[in-house]
Image 1 (tube, rainbow, N blue to C red):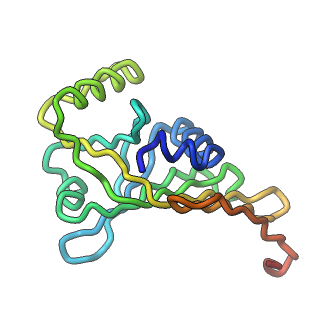
Image 2 (image 1 turned 30 degrees about the vertical axis):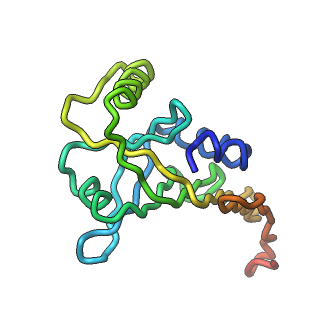
Length: 168
């Protein structure tokens, strides 16, 4: 599911994800190494033209991981330990973007946003979003969790902090 479809099915989650990505301009991507162990790497996401794009340096290890196994996790960066800013997790598979016209649209959108275009060659992927989650803690310790899976409804609940644990 591309970004536009995700935003139609789960508009609040898409808004929260975009806010978190915009707050720092970075996110983390979890990929699977050749030996099956996880790799986590920083990346600059770009939401444009109905897609969440992930551009990567040519032959970078994270790009090679994704060419071998397209499954990944995209996670917003967390900048404080209290959790009040919230965090977004998007799971799915990347789709390589080989089309020159789409790559040009990506380059123009990136330049418009940042004033920079990637020099060639580079890898470009679009995330096929399969599920998403948002977790946020309130100042009193309560935890709000929103979850969504492609084709389903957003599920939301609050876990109340009792002082010694969570009461579900």
